[in-house]
Length: 154
Length: 299
Image (cartoon, rainbow over all chains, first blue to last red; front, side, top):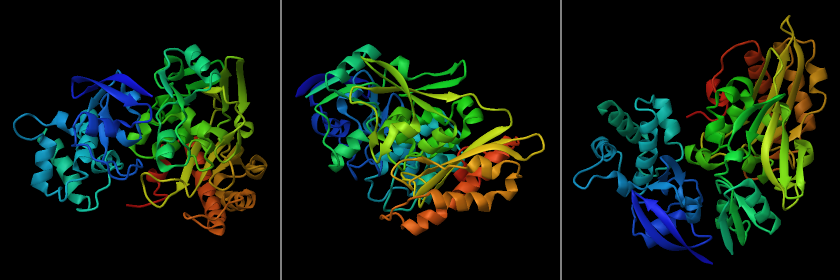
């Protein structure tokens, strides 16, 4: 059964028809064209699909799109200013925390939620904040450094 | 197929009576469906926004935690952290921040995994589940609720609405320790929760131990109070480990062999008793114990 539903994504209201079993990830990517959010494991293990739901990181692959009604969804597209980069994006580039880039949008969303809640996290707090995000390219040192740099840049 | 976001508990119970299944965070239900473990139910009612289910409130004899309270909230709630610390230890280990933001205590309890992290803490803290349907409300001891892996004694139209915990005795502490191979997105290899109450002379006056991932359900170990009573916490570790290994009925699977589980669950139980006793004596051990004292996976 398909239901018409209103989803608020990056501050924009979208009216879409959604099957009950459809996850938020596939609606974002295939109905709204917001392909910054990635499908990695499709098993809620890797965090490539991380979006913010009312400001909190959530794995969009295991979240039903219909449950997002009335909530505010933020994807990586919603963080990036029209001209230039978000500070987290710039820090990741400067620190060399991006190789293939597939995990990067999810990492940015987790880091953004962490810094919103805790503007000066310790290294341990950054590790916990990013503990739901897997990267198979870089190792994590440069990613941690990028988040720490963003925090110290304020 | 139908989907409804319940606006009230009554609406949710009516939907359940008509055959709908509840969904809160979806971290078990949706992932399970996508893995092919069980198809998504054809009729769902979302219960995560019901104000009645998202409160942590004091009661005459303790505290009542709404079933839709998230793990993220449990691990930061001041009362849970100070008085029901083992539950905060467990909530802090569940999944990752994103899992904890939407995953709920009621979901963890009713999913009835024998490896669930919150179950052993709830048992040693003396929790009971409140289940409700259109037919009425009842409380169920957790030992009667969990009947097997993924199985509960709740009827199909019954919703877990809250977990009730009794108030804590003076000079008591609790802790949950998990053996893990990695620090996030992990399922307990084994786990143990302990509650310890100290007498004025520093010996143990009462206590209990419950175990994760070593039986078809979470189990409480018989005879622990008698084993510990009158002894100093330092002196009971070996006896606890032996009693726990005896009580465990582990299986072998991809995470561990049965003999490894039987041994390590004893080690985890002794550590949980130690941490619970130190907390009972007033020592601050931060949540979760795994990180505070370096148990489980290192970096």
